[in-house]
Image 1 (spheres, rainbow, N blue to C red):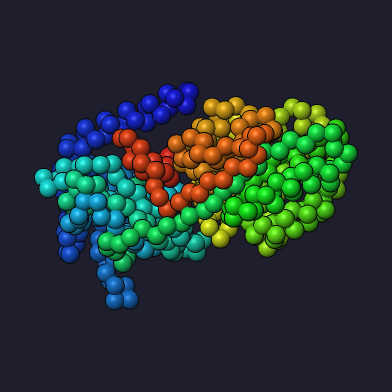
Image 2 (cartoon, one colour):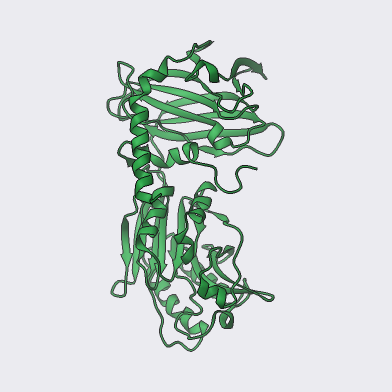
Length: 433
């Protein structure tokens, strides 16, 4: 199915769900837990076990599977809100025996008008601290959401669904007005295509000149292209392959320290007899944070003796989690989805050349920012709508854009699509046995 058809169906299903809401609300009997909390399920046949217990002086709202995977229910409470006001939601939970936590254990906020009618799509606060691997998992859901102008009420739901034998105990629910904190990040990307250089070192210095110029705009992150040690040299991949850490990462470390910015750049890595197409992440202080070995190899690299990587790591920075893809990775949905599922909010893409539509699709379908640095494709910074908000080229080789990672992107009918992906999206590779 094409990307356009998939998005169309998503919109259609969302619209149908809104239309059918009235028939769903009163479908099953409820029980009271005090303080306004009521149990709820869409149908009597799929009601989870529900009870209230006391632990360490705290009252916990509990839900558990009923022996069938169709189980679906929640504890719900309705509170007054002011349209246009931003609210901070948080709740802690304990869980056991849950296979896919992100889809089974969640919280939602439904916005209602004075007559109890839904005025916007659901908000799903994110799970900010995933469960540990102890027998009794501990997690936390926390996030910010803004009440639509027509909203006068918010219905908070603590949900358990689609897991036959698991259990969750909810604790310390908070829903308070406040001001959403900002998370500004300045992103820079560079267009540079060295020609007729005599060595990898000479090619790298062409990029170094532009990195120094970009530093004047005080970016937090600077992205360079794929294969900066081979472009312009006329050499083969294996000829320029080097260890990591090695001479090129040392030079990039100097540039990062001078610029006080993170750097990502692609080069060819040698580890014993093996050669990888690798992108490195260098911290502001020049330290090598980590590297990504290109998983999706085109035929040209395979014939050149390059070996694929086997993992999609996500890296912590001082402004959040980021991921890296390289060139041919963008032709397949799995790399970007794997990075987003692991928490990446920005994906950096050193790329030789690629399909413009697929480049735009990856930030849209994963609701991440994407930064490309390329020779034959567009060198740009893409927002969550797939729009290039800043672009570099031969005439203007440096592009810079400031983004706010805390600011949601709202879509017609879909609302905050980013918050919906982990709650409603399918399992990704490795999530289920």
